[in-house]
Image (cartoon, rainbow, N blue to C red):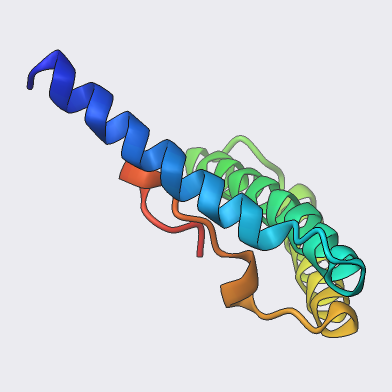
Length: 108
């Protein structure tokens, strides 16, 4: 793969990310709260998914006790419920929080 191809691919990714962020953080006063909420909830969702994957790896590796597995399950269920409540409060859907992560695919 040539350096120019890699550069072009990175630029396309940055342009998509810029468009996603611009869409999420709308500067008009009526949409500002919703745009900011979408941005914050997107970051929280990304972190939640990363933490959940790490937890699954730890469960599969057998490094957690049954109590720890149970606590993690309850915690992730409570977080998912709270995220649903916040999305409903701000009138957001999963699609509103989705980011294209380039070669990693979509967030959701």
